[in-house]
Length: 403
Image (cartoon, rainbow, N blue to C red; front, side, top):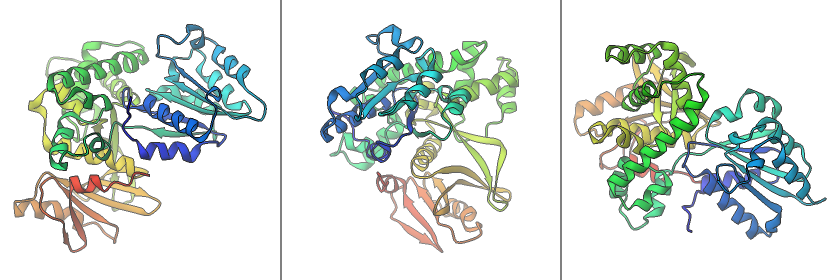
């Protein structure tokens, strides 16, 4: 079976290979975590690592012995296989299914000669107890579905324009490409992914769950991608529509959707005050194809989908991503890493001079000399407006650094 290359994530695994830290790989179901680890295991064999020194356990595989999910059986099996002076590479997929997860993972991390890699589809598996046990002894890689560059790699002869139209419509879950752009099959597959996340990663983490109300909250969040989403507004909107739900329940469900990596929050950032704000974050989907699959084509708002794609790409490239507040206005995204801040505005098109002026206004008002970029969905060439770069979104995505 051929795999889509994931160079950025593979580079991360290579960088941490051999270090005495637990490599924790997180991300939504079906985003490619297991495949990524399989690719890395193939690289280890190519490096000369003997296959018997690679131990892999997929705890969602029906063929995995049930006893390995209970107690410390998995720990003892690894311990018995170790050879003095040799490194054994241990991969535990979907670790949240271990009955004594914290003790098992922490124990494996303490074994001499073990290079440990674990995955999970819910941030709860890296909860307070495990994080406390592993304090200072783990690094985390959050895996997203395919970037546009990776998506293009599946169909290298397709034009970027045509590929981007498909990417906005169907998204980047790796299996989608095998469905040959059959919209019905893709919609059914993606809805299956959503249902699996809700049933396996969201509902079990609630003390009590109303699946109908959970579905209502999910629909609301999908329909309001890129909009400020206060808990009160969600509760009031659903209640006025005849689906009464308290703020506490809404907050629990939204937190669970974030914990299952289905939603990613973008906090607000006061550009002048240089401080993060604690209220009304925006939420974005882990993949642009999920909105159309869940809500139908009529909700395929290209402007919000474009903003969602940009947000996900910024998450891949930068350490921190927020929504900028500037006086009474807003800058779509503020990012920051070791090089300092940068600012991005996103527009579907700027053919209308009034639209262009509006989009530039917020960027022009930002104090200082940090990079400012206007990303546009139309196909006009690049331009510069007194230090503000205008770039086509597709060109910007294809210029993504891969390592």
